[in-house]
Amino acid sequence: MTLREHDLTLPLTEDAVRALNVGDIVYLTGEIFATAGMPTHDRLLGCLDGVEDLPFDLKGGALFHLGSLNEEGEDGALRIVYMNPTTSTRFNAHMPRLIPGLGLRATGGKGGLSAESAKAMAEAGCVYLAFLGGGAEIITAGIRRVTGIGWPEMISHYRIARIEVDRLGPLTVGIDAHGNSIYDRTTAAALDKRQAILEEMRKARGA
View 1 (spheres, rainbow, N blue to C red):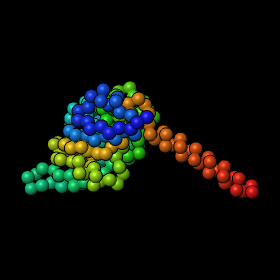
View 2 (cartoon, rainbow, N blue to C red):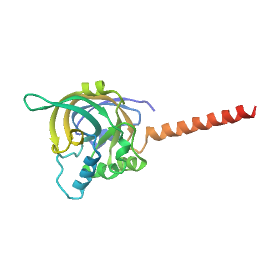
View 3 (cartoon, rainbow, N blue to C red):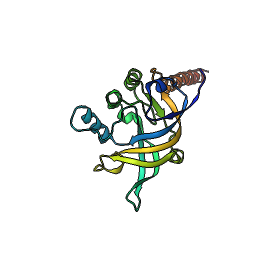
View 4 (cartoon, rainbow, N blue to C red):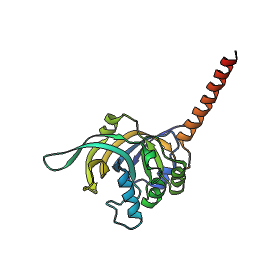
């Protein structure tokens, strides 16, 4: 399979998302949504249950697991000093409902998501985009400005930030919209390697 690079504009179409394969490289331009908060994901589920309205229409959008350091300018506008991915597996219990419920076409962070989430992505037409861990400088370079803040009463990294980005990336397709996951392959390869190491150790002890 030939891996490709894609320059995509948000909001994303289902066709554009289903054209992506595991390992492809993606650059995003448009508006993304970002939060690092577990309580935020709980609250988003509450929105699906009718507890309150969503702060933004996320349909066709990208909700990323990104933490940030922010500062307020003299004009009152919020500026992101830097952003870095947080571990997506923290949200394994939330994403299978949030992906179809919010109409997401992309999500992401670091570490991947569960098989249940991958199944939801395949059914809904959504991909998981992996950010480079520790790559705050690269990620932040793609940020142009904050265009909105959802739930400003929450502490800063729990809020949902709507952010204009220009060629945000490189991002790697970690889970595609066909149910393929680079994390499953990595785990299988690691287990195979572990087995080979154990066999070598047993042989060495028996020598």
